[in-house]
Length: 309
Image 1 (cartoon, helix red, strand yellow):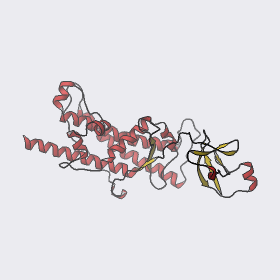
Image 2 (cartoon, helix red, strand yellow):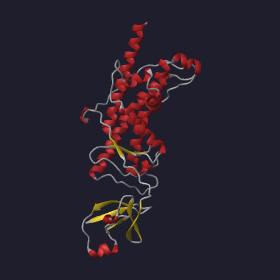
Image 3 (cartoon, rainbow, N blue to C red):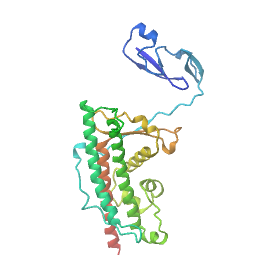
Image 4 (spheres, rainbow, N blue to C red):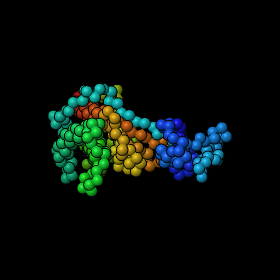
């Protein structure tokens, strides 16, 4: 049986759907219908260009299509380019670079130590996501909780996934800042200002810089899946700024833990909205591959400096 959905506010036709057949009595009473839907078929044959069926007072009428229509979502899926079974919990203490201190401002040993510990917490959060997801799959995990002192498990899962991404972004931003100061120390000593402070700045305003080459690669430096940096940047901004992200709070992957959100860049909802739907395994592998590439390229940069000297 076909039903027809319409916009909850302006009542114009959206799409049709198929549901199990119901009795005539249920149909007459409007039973079995989701909100903003009807069994009554719109008169599509009476529509011409620029007009649309609108559901008013229990029936369809044809009106000029002067309504605002949201553009279709664009789905974003990050693929690390390798199987989830290749994921390994790497320890970065031996390979995480050492950076010079910022006189009177920052002991970078503390920043380095916090980043290394942050990676270990990311691993812990990833395991927590797997555990929570497994409980939902097995039917042992409740999506809701009535206690005011205990959050609903689905929200625990969602906030864990947000902090999982937040820590990645914070670590990457810390590396951006420490590495920029290392590359531009004389400029930093003169102005005491970091001109490239985050992944967002690096990807939009510093594409011609040496720092960008180290992070993303070029003919000399190793290239990688640079879209990961864009994905982690957009995810972070969505979690931080996007109200419509809350529309995805009940969405989780059927087979794997996922990172899901909706994001309108610069809160421009007239533009195409991104629907981020990422396998958490691939996000973690992308983060590891990104760190590996950055640290390898930074070593190449330092070796090149020594040869030039």
